[in-house]
Image (tube, rainbow, N blue to C red; front, side, top):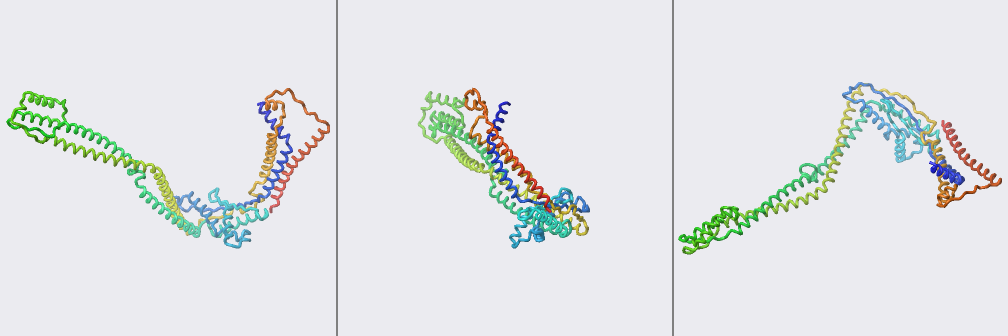
Length: 507
């Protein structure tokens, strides 16, 4: 805590040591700022309050009170701020004195529309606020012009009977018809855009036919094909092994020879192998033992010779091999096609999120336009029913609660606050400039700061000794400084006084 206090004390000392610089900077900032504030033109506002009531002659099932209030507010704003009515206001007031072309009139209409505000804080009560700048005219003229504009707006309000009647209803219906036509065209364009987008990106949109669904289906089928291909290749390999162990030709002995028994046994052995039996099968082992026994006894050597005949088992195995090889080739071709489809779908899937987001945006735009169209259609029907009743009954009550005022106090700018802000800014700027200069030209107001900066022990300090003449000179300078500071405050108070006097002179 003591360290913070010392830092604050040192900072204040550095600013005080360069107080003349601080005072000069403060004067410069304040004079410049006050000049800018003085050049800002005053803006005066005129306010008027109107009561526009309607008898509750329509049932709540036909017209909702809140919607009716909002519609009435919209109609008043649209009518009052229309170009025709604003042109009437301009020509009836001093705003139209120097207008010589349609372009100038259009510019003036836009400017006037921005300075008129119509709002409703309470049911059936409308506040009209008109603002006018004092640029190019005196404050009194600006205040009077704002009042005249507000009065002319009220006159138009009464003349055109915008609170009710056939004219207002007809104008509102025309406006709603135009809005409905515009919304219908936008709705048709949005529908065509959505249909075209769906047609263009048929495989990328959410649903059963999307790229993600197709990719899942292709991968599932590819997994099934891999399983079938492995099974078919295994079966083909086993069949090739059987075919390799089966003789293509059989030796057929003469009927008189004993070798016919061996030939029969060999045929049975080939048939067994064709059925998929292995050498470890009991029947295969028994056939081999019988053949070996006959050959050992010499029965196979007796007889009158033999001749070669095609082995039917070998032919059967060849047919089965061709069939299974064709199955393997077909499965491989299907696998290649599926792998190509998966690669293509992965590429499409990378674009799918963007397509889906764009489709959602297009659908959302269509839904918003559809809601707006339905809402306008309901409002038009509501207005038509209301107008039919208003044509036969007098529903409107109009009264000026508060006539247009002529303000003596400008609505903007808040000059006293700006003058005070400039003074505070000037004082802060002066102190900041003095402190910044002290950082550039370092001095040590205390022995502790010198010891801290140098890192060396300070044995002691010597107080400054002043002569009487030096003390007198310092007192004179101090008086001059306080005089300059007081003069700055005096100029501020003078400007505040002038501001309030000028407000009192606004007639």
